Image 1: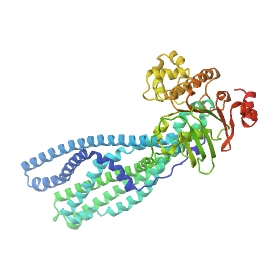
Image 2: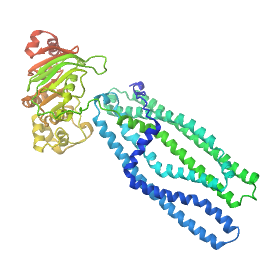
Image 3: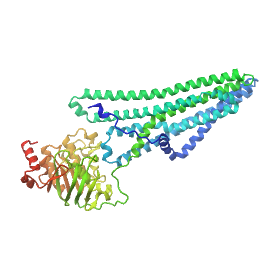
Length: 592
């Protein structure tokens, strides 16, 4: 397992920082009433914080200097009451915003998950499952602080900074200019840092995605890894990926942290310029002690929010890549969609027609080239041929998991592109060689084929494929809980359950893609009896490498070189002594 398989394979999504942020913050509009309440609380808290330096100035110049203790006590009492209310307001504001942010994250996660389910196979073919998971879980979680701090930190700190600047210039313009003389230096450094930082956080997100994809695939294939004693090689790959992840994080954080050093320097030199101007240039005779102390407090109130704003800006830079990755998927349009003028597919009889169909996965090499055939309702068609010849592609086009580039696929005379996808697939039953089972009961897994199926229908489907007997031998029968992918069941048992799940949907067109590949010979004999009964009256496509499973097919298509190389019954194809005959003889000489 090479680490090169997990190198960055995603295009950087650039939609513009401002556009991405506006789109993200637009989710706050659904909570206008709560946001207005939070803003009111914020305004009160900002006013109180701005009054505190004035309280200090008044206390020194108006009361302490003239020993007016009663007036001082009244001022202190007012300040204490207002600050206690401010503290409670801050707590309430943070609680409300946490509630809003969690609701927004749930909304975004639902939107993303729902949208991903509408995407076609091309999307999933090009992305490891771990990278998709990192979008749904990790990237969305990283947005929490950005959404919350926009109201709890960004707005109050921005208002505070603006108000402090206004108050300082109103009280003494010379002192204000001295205190803020280092602002140009901070602005330049901020621009340089954000340019580098955004790129480095994009790299970090990609490295995180690579690591998630590797871990997901590694755990999914742990049996193969242990069977071939490949733990050491996978550990080396993991070490390489985690080292790249750590290195990208350190580089990104190092750039972010440099911003705070610039702010500390600006704060220090600004304070020094303030006191030098007040004492040495203007002179203490022209500036009261209370005013100097108030300005010292205000300069702290200016640079502290600046520090918070830069920290928030770093959060934006850090998490903007996550928002971009989320919106990149939300903006991905499914290639297989219903046209605006589609109609509902009427009840299917089962006639399937391919008219000069050509198809390519990469738009370069045709898997199918000008293929034409017609299947009568109720006919069973077996598809055989070498791996990669296009057998599964044919049934995928019938199910419209992909769209043809040329030609037309019709069911009962209806172009599959001109009927709704849901009404088409609802009348089809598809079983692949991947006998995937979900966490839940056996009953729930079978019912997945028909969500409104009754218990009796579930049992009948299980009996039809001879799964009922082994199910009843389990401790809880149909209520037996299965772990992920049906852990604890044999491969054959899982295959039978997957077959029952397909059969319970009572499909008009049945597709069996290597459906008996994992079933032993004895079990296969039982399943064949159920298959024969269930295939009656249904148009069926059976893909099989094991030729013994298709002996009773009405017709056999030998798929090779992008088309149908041979067609006929078992007897007819053997008499031709062509490709099918060679496959037949090979399996006779080398029995499974």
